[in-house]
Length: 270
Image (cartoon, rainbow, N blue to C red; front, top):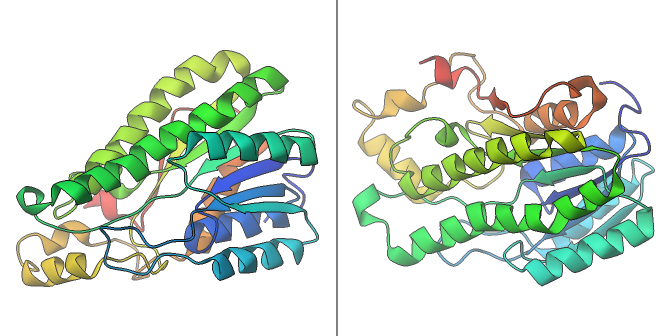
């Protein structure tokens, strides 16, 4: 780790109550950044795992403060543009500026593509794709107005680069954020604002849909190999993804924009 690589920076992170978002908040804070954190702190209506809680978000606050950094944390839904814009205003008023945006919040569920309930499709697209768009809409004007550049990192997935089975709705949303990021990278380059996506495979976050696991087991000999990794670790930890995000957020990546960075244990080699 490079100490103080993000000293003097302020980073906004969505989905920060637990998992990758929490790990990213702690990692960026450990490298010197102050944090604006948000999470809706509820379970999604169409997923089969428990969502984060306000207690989880409070623990993120504690862990960031343990790094001797400041944090403004708020319960907010990334589908609520007014709430996002208010948080950006309050965060900039408190910390003085905004430098890094990590659009991490998302949900996941599993099903055969033709059996995905309409409500499940809509919620997945609204959270993962529209919520990311609204996060950009709430933050990019501030980054441009400041005139000091910036870094945007959007969490996609291996499913944003490959048509993974049982994840058609999730894959559509994660392919969508890649298109959004590529367009924005072209548009924002003139402002020295970089836009990149990270693409995890399996991450130990508690967000594994039970139905997804069942389908992989049931189709282990036909579709299961698509999910196999090359490296020996069976799964990534949130901190592995946070390390990649910290790199893209820092000036070490100052000439990197519009890329899709896999952190996937070699899954895409298969």
